[in-house]
Image (tube, rainbow, N blue to C red; front, side, top):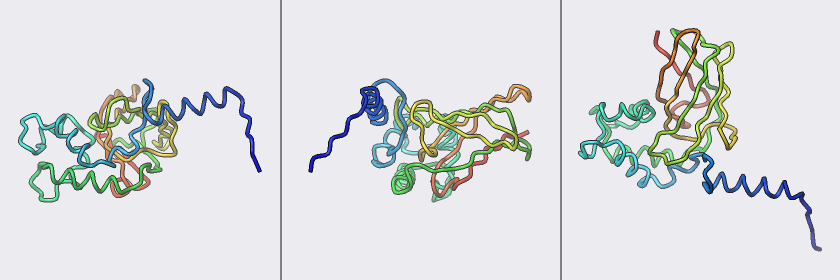
Length: 197
């Protein structure tokens, strides 16, 4: 038996453009799904970008330029020396590679222990995860909850990785950046971004 499926041309074009976007073809931003599948390459990229003095470790000053990685430092710094050496980063990235690619979660913005409404939130992937990666944006509602969506590729959650969260709320004169790690064992199904008073 032979089965034939006829699709309108616009449906075929849409599907092909979606595949091209997800696979990284073209100039549209892509998601970083699978960024930790090759933990060694991702570790090399992080150290090439962040290890300014080339000593094989990321100190607190070097981590200032990557708020997302700095936010995950407690899970990475297994020897407690307040810096991240290559082996520690490689071990963490390897672990991330074995976790969920996408983490479904509730994101909440809090300032001074209270939910922050009417804030614009943008999560931008750490630069070492690759070029041309999409950001995730949304506005907080009453209760401080935010539904983040990708610029181009709409996903049912956020890709595992390290992000800088840019939060702007004009009425309260807030314009700040925080780091966050998205992973099964880091944020679970709830991410609370806490803005200090």
